[in-house]
Length: 450
Image (tube, rainbow, N blue to C red; front, side, top):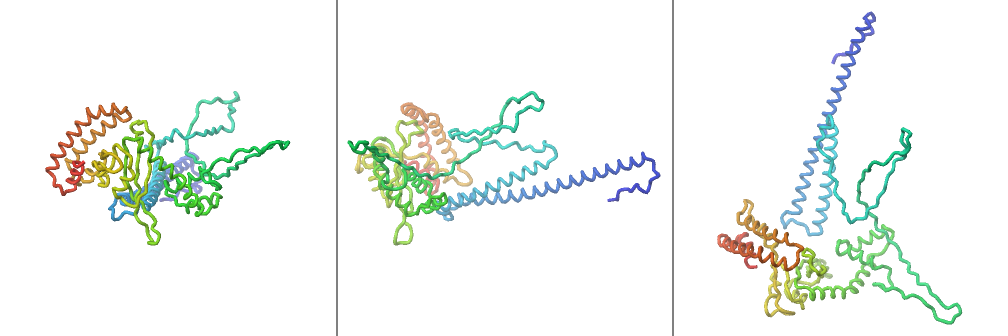
């Protein structure tokens, strides 16, 4: 690049010529500055694009890890507790990468020439739950005196934003004072209110604290030793063994309530759900855990606007024998909605112990899930047709959900029953064309047997 012309040695030049040279030199400097700025913008944008490509590649890898952890081969899966932690860490990492990508995209948009280059609109805010209490904080300007001297400005509108807040857990001590009163002349005895009853008499915890500890342990899977660490950090150092003592005594005292819940569920219901799931149980002396089972007995008619309140009772049993189902359902007569586990089939037989034979209601979702699982990668017209026919039944249920029982029964007899009869007639014909040993044949046989 040539050096700018030095005009000091040409003092004899006319003033208008000097001014012309100065103007030309200024234009050259402006053009050079604009060119350097454009080069810098392009270089910056290229750097942003390179960073964006790296982040997108990283995000694709994280999503692949997440899918493998959640949907990969069962032989490579972690146990449920470890899997939840792994998924949580991956979800956090994915969210962090997405936030970094959004930041780089905003920088690229900001470096574009003119506001029209930024075609990405503002992110739509999510609505926070309506049931949460609102605390309004009005931020006024430092002064609303009008600069023109007419007085105070008038309010013409407002901008409102919502953010989710939390009030951290706070421990407090409930001090119960029971004054004593006596006759000033000594002619009568002492009057004092009776001490209120507590779940754990003579102990520190209120019922609210016991419920909080139990919920954290059994619903949120937070061990007592970890809860003890959290309590100590909040200024309440209580040993884990003390928490364990509280939970043991609480469990023993509320056991009759759980037993009563089971009686009410069986006595007041015509239909119950029943299922069982594994639970690791400590096995002292063996150095490892053994497998136990939690049998859930459930009633929930809220989706149908039923008159009875929902309820669930979990029964622990050391195994999965059908005898445990007999024991748990003793005294119940009606319908139980179950899966295909054979431990329930004897409950429908005339020689059932503990009551009359039960009606077994099987779940359409289980049969539909087996059909989807049996669908080959290249597709299956049989599975597609079956899913369409089942979807028609689901549409009927969506239309009558929440209606009165008699109306639901009428609609099901008029609309659903012909669909079901046609479905099983069609399914029987299709099953004759498919090998019974194939996965699709087994899925079809599963539905036909039930």
